[in-house]
Image (tube, rainbow, N blue to C red):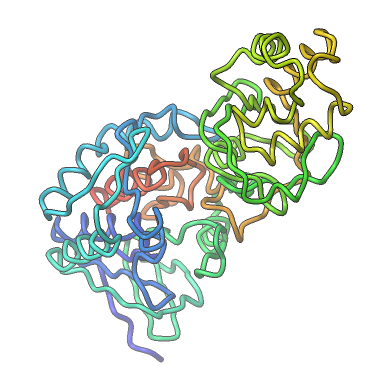
Length: 394
C-alpha cells in the first residue's frame, strides 16, 4: 500500500482561485498541498487578455455577477476587493494600465501575474505538484486523495478545478463530480461569455459579413451591453455578444441597436432631402461598415434611390436598424466559452468561507461554483476573492 502523506489542506486545481487559496492558507502557517493535473500552473491566466491578463476590474461590484443565488458573492468580494488585489500587484511592481470600462491589464506579459502568485505560494511554503491526476477522493476521516503519484490526506479539501470551458486546456467537470459525490447540488451548466451561432436568413445575417465589426447596444430582457459586435462565419461574437450570451436562453431573441448614437429615422429623412440621388447603402456606409450596410439593405429594401423611398419606408427601415432582432441558433459551446455558467450550488456553501454547509472541511471556489462574472476581469476577481475566503478558513 502506498505511503500516505498528510497535510493541513489539499487544494485541487492550480488556476487563479486555487493559487490564491493555497498562498493564503500557506501564509497562515497551514501545510498546503496544491495539485494540478496539467503541467502548468495558471494556464488560463497566461492566455487571458491576449497574453496580458485582464486581472481585475475597477468596478467589481456584486451586480456584475450572475448566479441562481445572486447575493452569495457579496461577502467575499467585499472582504477581498479589487483594490486588495491591485495592492498585491503593485507590491510586486508589476506595471499595469486601465484599458476600457475599468479593465486592468498588465503592461507586459501575463506571466508576471503567475510568477507573483507562485512567489507568494513559495513564501507560504505551499507544496505545488504539477502533472498529478486525481483518481479518487474519499473520506474515511480526513479527506483521502488518491493519485497516480501517491496518496494524500488532509482535514480540508478545496475544489478549485474550474468549470467546463476551454477543454483543450484541460478543463473538466471534476469539481462538479466530487461535489455531487459528497451530496452537494450542482446547478444547470452551460457555456458563458461565448459567441452565438446564427443561421443565414431574413434577419439580414450573412456569413459573408465575417470580420465586420460595429459598435452596438445588444439587449436581452432587461440586460443591455454597449460594446463592439463582430460578425463571424458562424454567427456573432465581440464583447457585447459575449456579455449577453451569459443571459441569453436558447430559443429566445436578442435585440441589436446598430446605430446607438443616432436617430436613424431623422438621419435617413435628412439624407433623402440632401442626397436624393444616393442609394441607401451609400448613405449607411457613412455610419457603419460598407459590407454591413450592403447586407442590411439587400435584406430589407428594394433597389431604389432615396428620393423614391416613402418616408414611412425610411422610418420602418430605421426601426430595424435600431432594433435588429436576431434569434441565435445556439452557441459555439465550451470550446469557445470563456467561462462556465452555473456550477456547484452556492446555497449549499457558506458565503463567508466557501465551505460546504453539510460537509465540514469541503470547500469550493472560483469557476467551479455557480458565480459567473461579466467580461472584463470580473471572473478573475471572483477567483481572487473566493480563493482568499477559503484560504483564510481551511
